[in-house]
Length: 337
View 1 (cartoon, rainbow, N blue to C red):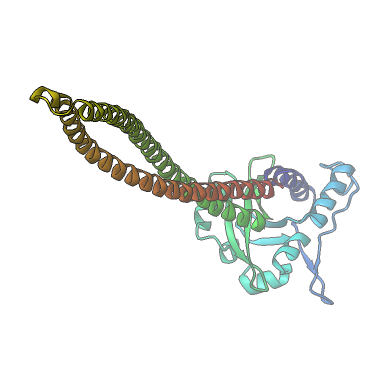
View 2 (cartoon, one colour):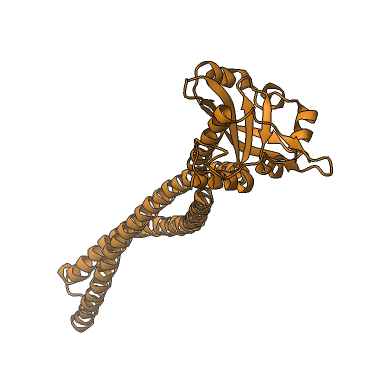
């Protein structure tokens, strides 16, 4: 049952009882024990003859509510002077009626811990409207507790204000849980923002690494053409070597007879010169390609390390977010209990 449902039930019983007392009995008085500090509660008789406006069952319920509820109940006259408090009031604040009125005063203006009591009394007494508010109160032993207060006017059948009834519910645990929830949600929001940032870093590093892989792939493709050139050079060298061997054999066989006998060597020489020029060009190309390839692999390795770093950070933050979500869920469950 929620605080509002409990408060509504208490007011229903109290209003019926107080109106019955106002019509059929003398004004409500509180008797104080001289032997101890406990409140001697008003005699809530449960026979219908004592309270013609209420049934025996209703009186029994009222008696249980007044004595056993954990809520603090305070009854005041129409002007706001305190006439009665229940046992729950004493359990919550540590004061009996006598101790409370002697220490803090007998009027709600004196005893209220709320700075807005005048405004609230105006709404209740002049406008006839109930007010609900939360306030930080101090018990007899100096402990601070948060309470939800329902301050309600009670009217007789003629529409005249006869009593004011205040019911305080201890919401300290709920208030603390609310504060913890707000703090946890703040931490969760921070973690989510951090997760989003690290996710973007991870995406950037992934893109960089993919670009490095692509660049390395292109350089590797270029090494394929270099390898093909080297193979061609090797084949040409073999052919030139074979031709040179043939020309050498012919030359030894026939001897130098005329200038035309050296044409074969001249052709081979030209081929060798051309092959040498091509080799120089390819040597520079090979050197540049190898240098770029080395740089590319170095960059790729750095990207890999950076990727691993951001990946670890991302999953660590993701785990933190999961923990914060579990904490929010637990705090929310506490608020609902």
